[in-house]
Image (cartoon, rainbow, N blue to C red; front, side, top):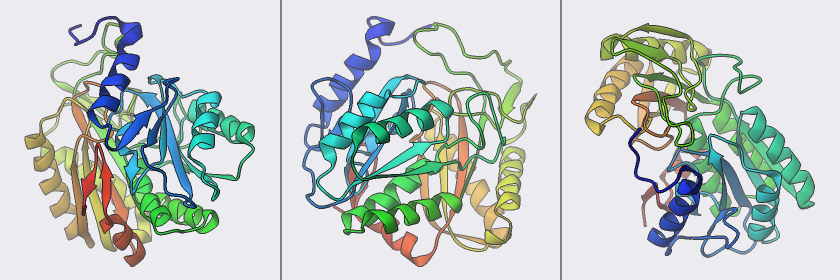
Length: 329
């Protein structure tokens, strides 16, 4: 294993310190190191709080700032943040309008965010993202996993909060975005957790893991490596089938890299997916391509399709200024 680090036990602490220093105009790291928060809070706005295991950067800390999250709680690598982290983050960023928790559907995340909400004693609502169509259940979840669609929920809900939406309609909006989101990923290599020092799973040069999760957990099947066309066709067919009657009209197409995939390959996959979807009657009205919801150094990508109504399109277009996503400012 070759990584830029001093000691596996210090990598998260040192990374967070560097991240906060690099983006000090946008966010601050709590002195305890338990959460990142927006540098300047907007009074009377519903606060958005998210988080999860580290190793998926820029998710979630990279999306703290204007138009997205008010706070993000980083757990250890691929490990849920603790309830006290979540409670303290919520207390720190709630300016009187309550908090919306955006939680990926992993058992540890769901349980700890529920406990954090109970401990906070404030006005808290939650939306659980579950956009992965690859598997219905896994060793990490009950029900579908929350993956790259989480970013879209955070962006659109963040814009709604910035506009002054109250907690109840904002929660309904976030749930509507999640209900219209579908994702699936494929891995060409494993990832290597620093503390483990070896790949999470073994995969040969001629194989791929189809439907892989963002922690390297198994997907639908291990298969021989296919062409990019064949991979895009299978993923898009699965997404369109799962959307059913929803698969018509305007959509956001998001091709996400897992950390070890060059932009050249991501844009190739985007072009293939766009052509396939538009032949199925899905109009790609908005696009996002890049490594935003990663799995450390894994080579691979996911495709996310979010069917968008006019309100969602308008909120997606609103200005955002975070370390990982920014436009319109």
